[in-house]
Image (cartoon, helix red, strand yellow):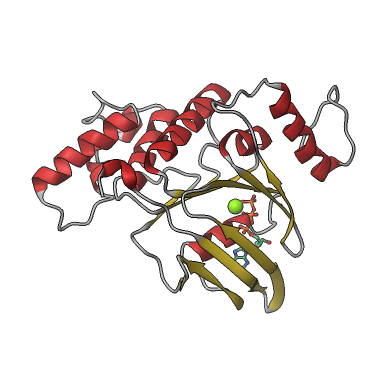
Length: 263
Ligand SMILES: Nc1ncnc2c1ncn2[C@@H]1O[C@H](COP(=O)(O)OP(=O)(O)OP(=O)(O)O)[C@@H](O)[C@H]1O
Ligand SMILES: [Mg+2]
């Protein structure tokens, strides 16, 4: 297998229930979640705060276990975190005392030979557009650049599955659009199965082949919308707007194209 042929793995979520206890009171966070994500696909999950999106990602990542049901990756039940599953959290979680190169290299197993480490760090630094900033500390980088370091650190292990939990939430609109394009470009090259959790409807449409809409209390999948748009996607196209209206309709009922919206 050469570098560009990473084949993502399929994800099956079957009858998953997740319950937490808060002050001894049970709280059903996810109820009968069923989801099939094909290998190499990219899907978005969107839904209001507290509907269980992060919980679902944590279950897929093997960071927690469901109370009922099961999650399969390539047909095999998830029981613990795997190096083949990369997770990118909302906060960049970089080591402030380590420079870009060291932060990115942290994603690799310790046993990786020094020369291979160096080559891979350079490759992924280039891939996310950070060449020339290898020696910079996180505090010497902009928010968007820090996010790029975090992306490179997650990708350097060449995960078969990439889970993104509101990764661009805190960034300005331009940096956000830029990074969305970068991640889609990398996904097209590497084809790792990608699941993006977001609050941003345009981001969900721009990046996902499917949009999984969740609703809360308990968290359930309300609707799945297929995104069939010509590539490269244009955020201002008529077809994009039609999908945007479909998604808004799920959250706000019937709307017209002229109205203003807020979640
Ligand atoms: N470890 C935990 N213990 C108890 N309750 C939890 C725990 N983790 C999450 N919850 C509860 O589960 C519910 C869903 O949380 P989750 O973080 O999955 O929501 P979310 O959809 O990601 O929300 P947001 O969009 O705000 O990030 C919340 O009501 C939260 O209080
Ligand atoms: Mg969350």
